[in-house]
Amino acid sequence: LGTSVSHNEKHYLTTPIFYVNAGPHIGHLYSAVLADCLCRYKRLRGFKSKFSTGTDEHGLKIQQAAADAGKDPLVFCTEVSESFKDLFKTFNISYTDYVRTTEERHLRAVSHFWKILFDKGFIYKGSYEGWYSIPDESFLTESQITSSHDKNGNPIKVSLESGHQVEWMKEENYMFRLSEFRISLIHWLQEHPRVIQPERFHHIVLRWLEEDLPDLSVSRQRSRLNWGIEVPGDPEQTIYVWLDALINYLTVAGYPEEHADWSGVTYHVVGKDILKFHAIYWPAFLIASGLPLPQAIYVHSHWTANGLKMSKSLGNVVNPHEKSQRFTVDGLRYFLLRQGVPDTDCDYYDDKIVKLLNSELADSLGGLLKPLHRLEAINQCVRLTNGFVQRHAPWKLNRNDEHDLRCVFGILLQPVIPVLADRLLDRLSVESSERTWDDLAFLRKYKGGYCPFEGRALGPDTGVLFCRLDRLEAMKT
Ligand code: ME8
Image (cartoon, rainbow, N blue to C red):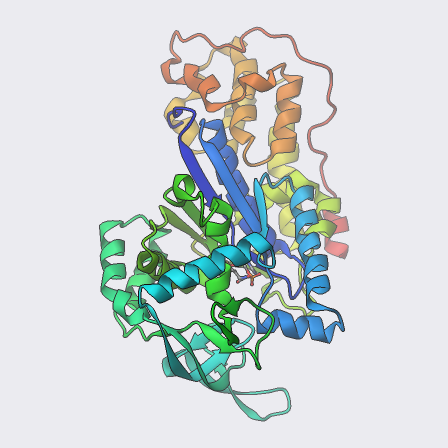
């Protein structure tokens, strides 16, 4: 159950900022829903929270996508950025700030941050020669690439991790002294064994740090990349998109002027594909600039669709808007949070969501508003929840307390399925001011404790909570 906190304790949660080269899919939504659920939970516990998301709009990949669409880059970015915003509105992502890297406030933050690193001597002019993957906007070493063939059978080199083609790049640019931070990063991880979660990813990062950490190229020649932020004092160079993008977390915190309240209480939700950038590059940049490191990095794995990686070319990208029309917004939120496992990839297919929602939302949760046999109530407790219920054993409530039990579930489920939880709580006559973790405090001393919801009459009928879905319909599509 956790304890509630004094109401000015702060918590700053972020999602990755999403590339605008293509529209959103369930993977992006998953990151946002995961962060939203965490943030709603923290708010219910009394934290004052900042929650940011947004779009990553610079770089070669976006420059190319805009050119392919025959559009001005900013117009193109605005259109796609709006589609992410729409998605997050539909799914009730309760962010407090939506940042775009093309905004003026971000440009100021990036230029300021660059100057600090430069003045401290962590950035120097050098030359980079090596492999670069445009889709990943990432520099790769020999050990991170392998030989392959393009669709015409020509030999190419690809990234081992993403499978994307890499190109040889040789140019003069600015380098960041990443190599100087290897030992500090190892110490940071060793001293904070829970800073990267789940633990598996913590070990992966430590293994990466056992190898040499070369200095990092942090700019590109303007002639190759002009869609980006200019290097302060050098109009011939554009800042590397990942340095630009990571600074969004500071922009939202109010950097450079007023970030102190938030930059020390930051928690990042990221996909495993961008672990290296968040667990190595970002902390190194922060140490170099003298800013506090994140409190935690929560890493999640990926969604595949019918067993395959989602890709535009395969045409199997799962569109969340379309799915929400079939399964409802809370239905899809529930599925993603219930089935998604941070450690391992998860597969999406329609029949899976139908089965889960029928059994857990339509039957179990929906059943909460039906008259219950006592035994059924116990069964539902067990099916609906796990650790919490085991510890607090609300089924020890006596026969007249079914109402209390439903209120407890309604409150607990708010971070996961806010719309359904609200309907349930409305029906149960639980006021909106009575829906925080503090309002569950009675459970801690249940035996003899007074339940504030006891004996209340039901509110107006809000209809069936969640209708059963037709499996055959799902299998047709
Ligand atoms: O990497 N399953 O943006 P991005 C689960 N702009 N999550 C997925 C997913 C999938 N199949 N595909 C994407 C970038 N995601 C950079 C980030 S942050 C300073 C800059 C999620 O749009 C996952 O969290 O390619 C991934 O890390 C994120 O979307 C961003 O992907």
